[in-house]
Amino acid sequence: MRYSRREFGLLLSSGLALPSYAGGLQRTRRSRRIPVAVESWSVRELLGQEPEKTLAEIAKMGYEGIELAHYYNWEKLTADRVRKALDASGLKCCSSHINLKVIEDDELPRTLDYHRTIGNSVLIIASLPPQKTVAGWIDLAKRVEERAAKLAEHGFRLGYHNHPGDFRPVEGPIPWEIFFKNTSSRVLHQIDVGNMLKEHWDPRPYIRMFAGRTQSIHVKDRDANYEPVVVGEGTLPWRDILDLCETVGGTEWYIIEYESKDLPPMEAIRRCLSGFRRILQTRQAASA
Image (cartoon, rainbow, N blue to C red; front, side, top):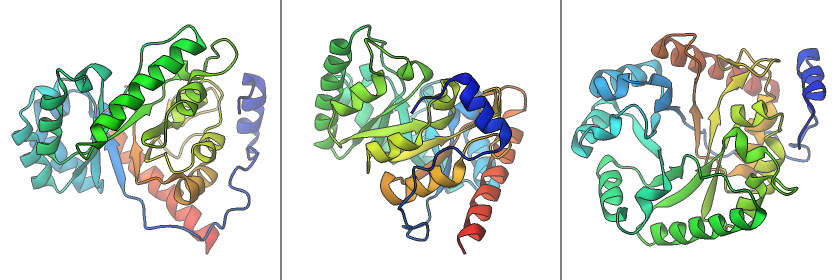
């Protein structure tokens, strides 16, 4: 569901809850505890420069995993070095952001070998080329579906991550819906809640709409002006979002991401984890 900027601003700034999409769910009916990872974009160049030190510090904060992203040159590190650094830290690679090119047939063997070595079996397409027509998005969805089927033969899962442009209508409908309505449940639905909120879209209906496909979400927060803030200092309806993840979403990982450069990277992700833990504790207390 999309709100106008004025509607969203009034709801958020007033402290009123957005319409609940977790209604009818038993809030106490939860699966196992969902672990928390950090998106490597959050630490910028540090991962590529000092992988062992950076991963050790991330683990010491209390993170359990990391999602690797194809930015800031970490991918120039050998797979063996990345695996050793992960093992030494105790972190798990929960998934990795990629571009579509690296899973085409000519590059697929190298991509799979790298990710097998580092212990990762979930590949998330970070972005797709924007399409100007519904037909273009349907064709792109079919292409990704074919790649997902191919990856499944090798024990890998494939998903797609949203950016703000995925919620700007094309010939009426939004690309996010076109894409996922034209792919099967084997294509994972990675919601970036901060990116959705930037376009004034509510993530909750989509977790329900594509039930069982939200293997992970990007945990970001935004203030009433839609600017990025430390997790827990913003306006998102976290209780509903997390309830949906744990009941109908099929969520396996919460992935914290901090995009702003207002804070040093390691301080930012430390504060975000503390803020997210407070959200989880408050939610648990409310459900007791």
